[in-house]
Length: 305
Image (cartoon, rainbow, N blue to C red):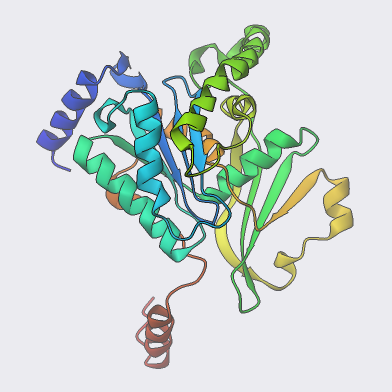
């Protein structure tokens, strides 16, 4: 993006009411989250402080990703918002469904470009790991495994990050105050406003899990130990005994929650987000054409390096 383009973007961001601290936007408006890496397609709306404002998930018999745009419209309408009122968009990048991940990223990019919004791409498996850590306080590390066929799996490793209030990074050092902030977990009750998703999603889909739990996710975090990658053999079969004793959870074929995906990506959104061109899908398998091309390159000794 050119410097003039970046300046225009900064002016547009400022006009949307972002609070600037030391020249950096710290508190965005509401954030839309799109997650379609599995059949459990989900859309969530987070409030300016990361609080859950409602979510819609595809019903079990749903097919395709048509829910994405309609659910986003319903959630915004339930709060009397337009796309221009958003502080940004967070999208799950997979690994997962070829069609789902492509559709979610395409919609996220379109919204970001059309309304000059910040955009962040988050590995969906990171959201799944955060959800597992939120549900299981005894677990310190999560290994996520997704079957990629042909005796391969996608694997990603995460550990629990120190809890802190992402909305106030400066006060994180005062653990005493953080304890008080923990009381704001009661705002999870306020998160009942997430029930607005009931209105927004009536007849079309179900509302995602407890809004209060999603509020907790906003205060938790994950640290990536191993980025999503294809593995084979023993790496797809962690030893059950070792895992249990070490406080590690092996999460197979998870269905990431849009709220958790949003919680993982929100800090990066506050820091400025990603370039839309850099938000790329993680597919479970490469296309047949890519595999054939690589084999041809190798057979002809054209790989280089």
